[in-house]
Image (cartoon, rainbow, N blue to C red; front, side, top):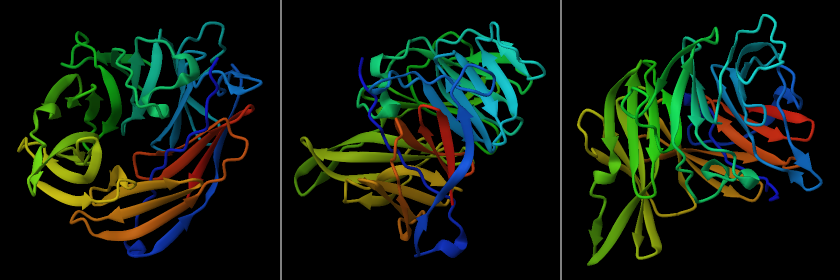
Length: 357
């Protein structure tokens, strides 16, 4: 049995107008604690003498609520910070749910979870089992889990609304899903990738109203007689839902030369402009906040640095986080839908969720 190695993935905080050109250090305080166990409001953590047996837990924060994927108990829970349970979906045999909105559902492997403004919950349902050691793309491996998956939507009462595939109807499943995102118009985006291509799907309800295969873009560049091959390494969505932010790494052979961040208007269907060029490969795109600020992140041991840039590529702030990796089996920092920063630490006793300010 492989041992899970603690991992840190870092995301940004909300930038306010008064934070320009400052150097800011954030600190964390407890937001919620979810105990280990099988009762409602708990999550099952499997450990042995070495640590975690498998990474079967996923946590996200959406609409200030905690969404927990528990692949050991095969269920999803939406929990308020005070511990009140708003929803339980999944394997609920012999579970006393009482007045909790709930629904029995047969999940394969639960992936990403996100909520919209009406508290509908979108859940990635993968037709695969957790791999030994729990390592997939999200936990730090370079490999891609291409297990097919669909998106299932439940309302806040726990009722299944519909299942989405690539074309809307649940016929063709998605391959590896890199991210789910809900824009300001409550349209669902699914960012999917294969070994050599990225695709973006947008759904208005059950109807797919946009699709692009970014693998068709010509990303080759020439400079002083050299040819640089571009490879997409990240795609993010503007909250308006009308633009993509695409990060492309350029290589000369196997050597990384630079990274470029492009703006891609959906209606135009092509790259509109190069927002910035990043010569230091340690600084990579993490996200865009409020359609105004681009976050580049750099992890150096227990210190994390964010360079915050505006849409003309000018660096306007540097943000630092000092991470204390105490006796955690696994740590990760996550961004909610409003740009707030949280982290969760998996302990033997439960999941400790912190908010950074």
